[in-house]
Image (cartoon, rainbow, N blue to C red; front, side, top):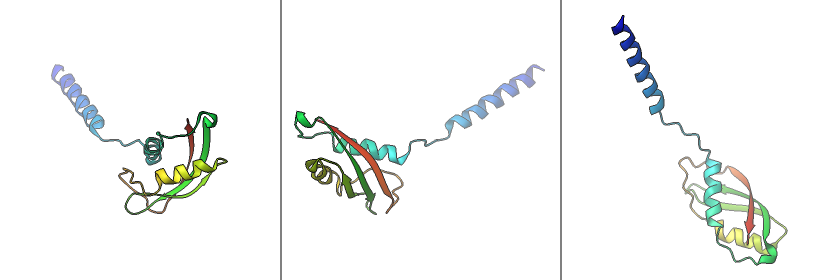
Length: 111
């Protein structure tokens, strides 16, 4: 009876080890894109009077994994040029790049 309980415990440990050893990728590619875009836009020269600027950025990724900005919807003209200059044709680090898929992300820049 004692050997049977040891075998059951050993099987349970092996089964648990196999489940925990699987690589589960839960991080979404859009989250990784947002983090990388945030880093690209982190340094800016906007004045304090424009302390909270927002925009909707539509972009796609090309075959080389580069961002191609399609449009920037904002009320502040300088921000549109800034976002396009910082993001257009910048390479992003993604495992599975979906070429041609259109992404829309909100961007908020603080001076």
